Length: 101
Image 1 (cartoon, rainbow, N blue to C red):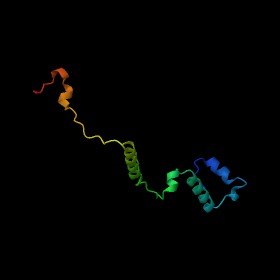
Image 2: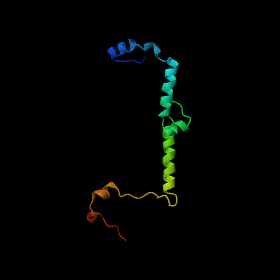
Image 3: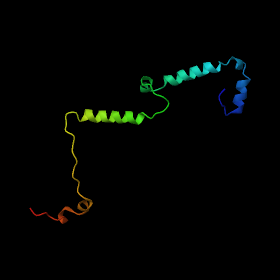
Image 4: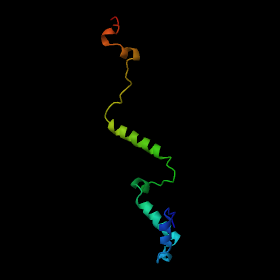
């Protein structure tokens, strides 16, 4: 029996006329396992995974890399951009020194 928190319900279930007709523990575990297996995501049913989820970050990284590759398939990968320094951003454009030609 499960750990019931309500003692009145627990006593009522034990005194029920069909209390002796409960299925065996093995049967209950088989039904519970089938129910858990039915609600698993499709990718967990297809991939042989264990209890640990250490592979999930690696799988997500591969998916993101594949998506980026598909999006940038016919384009050149952009290079680094020169960003203005913090001092240049703080000064207004009219106050910046002009470089000699």
